[in-house]
Image (cartoon, rainbow, N blue to C red; front, side, top):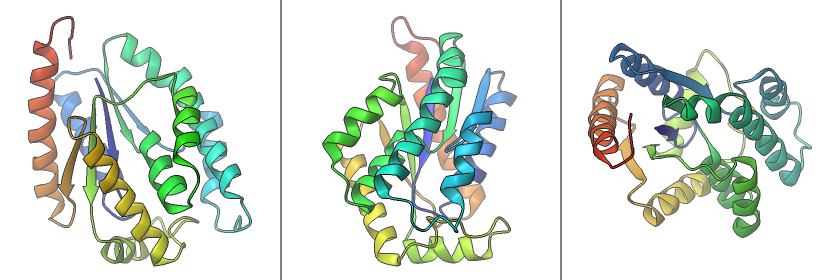
Length: 214
């Protein structure tokens, strides 16, 4: 099973992805925890370029292609083999981030992006996408106080982050069977329990489906 966490900056995806991966592992599942961009030696080098606030001149097309390059390496090296072995992969961001940030946020053509994403991901889509939704102002305030500091995308104008959030909500509405929206403004423990409830129910349904196993 392939589970992804999406949402605006500052929604707590990284914290919750780690918690969920640890919880699933404690239940005896073979869990692969990944983050985007990165997750591989090559991907981490690409991440350094994408997150560096000094790279303000990075063209949106180049930005999008770098994200896709990191993603393709992650899928080839880590995620596809793990899923083929019957494991669970939990990823902090995935292809929907490109649609939200470079598509809705930057204004790149969504049709072209979908074709490139299908190529970069080997046509693999998540079984479940959890959108941690939060008001961009609140999310960015969290990022300012985050020990990790602000990255290049965090530093974009608030209007950009509002477009990204709207993009996520549009994507969720288009595929309601795959997406579940979680209120990320709640305390972390409350958010985690809601995620556990959703994932637990989906895992039971996934296991019960013909030819499927978690």
